[in-house]
Every structure is written in structure tokens, then in C-alpha cells.
Length: 216
Image 1 (cartoon, rainbow, N blue to C red):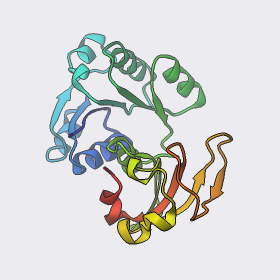
Image 2: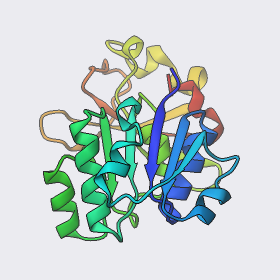
Image 3: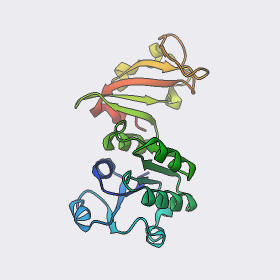
Image 4: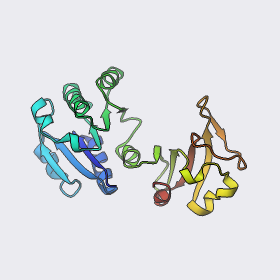
């Protein structure tokens, strides 16, 4: 099912996130108070709205309750970020993501209801989009233009089988490097004869063109 996302704020991160989500097939609403930035997004979004995101009435009129994800991408404007996160929370948006520029801002955004806080130095727009657009990926790392790493739980049909039985390298063109032990959170080299448990978080390396094989 196609995901819907509202990207509030068109700085570098917001633009990258919106374009990446749109390229992945999501319905993307972009919102900013700068008409020129909105015009530059023609062809990279489903809809655009010019609005003052510090104004509660204007934020409420965006129709955020219809979104699967609201991404608040205004780390330089704390008041607009607070207003947008608070309204999205009141409207029971399933996933609220907010960009932060400091530890203090991160703390505030989490307290008012952000489900995930993004620090731009750690997460780029494409990386965030890969995670948000997927029902499978827990984290995504771009190694270079060809190779990437993904953290994910095993697919249901993998559970109870081991690496030898699954032959993931042949069947999915992926390499499972390690898995995370559920009890202590430590990564461990995978024993190819050990059956996978549903709670075993996997670290996988693959070519970016093969992501569709595991992003179900």
C-alpha cells in the first residue's frame, strides 16, 4: 500500500527526504512558507501548500490526520517544530518524525510527541526515506553508490530456518553479516546452522538495486 507523508519545511534535509520518498512511490505533501521553494518542488511531490507553520490554524488546515507519516524538518525553527509536532500528535498521526539541531531540542520534541528525532549529521534525507518508506527496514546505511547495509528483522518465512537452508545469497542476493542478541543488544557473528528467531535483528549487506528483494 502506498504511503502518505507530509514534509513540513523545505531546507536541505526536507527537500532530500521529500524527493526520495516521492521517487519511492509515496504520496508526498510538502509545506513551506517560501513560494519559491515550493515551486522548485514541482515534479517531486504530489501536492504543495504555502503555510506559516508557527500558526496553529494553518497547521491544522493541512489535513495531517490523513497522513501515515509527518516529517517536521525545521531544526532552525523551534516554535514551528513544536507547533507542528503537537498538532500531528493531537491528530493521532501514526508516525511523527522531527529534525533536531541540539540535545535540548531533541528532548523537547520527544516530550511533546515525536516518535523519532533525526539529527541531520547522522541521517540524510535518502537514508531517512529508505527507513520510513519501508515496513521492513529498521535502519539503512549507504556505503557508496552501489552498496548499502540494512538492519531488519527476519522475514516471517525465514524464522525457524538457518542460513544453510535459506541460502539467502543465492535466493535474495544478500549477505547476512551478523545478528543482534535480543537479551543484551550485542551484535554476534551468525552461526550458519543456527535457526533464526523472530526477534533476531539482522545486519545485511547488499547492492542497492537488490533492495526490493527484501523490502516486502
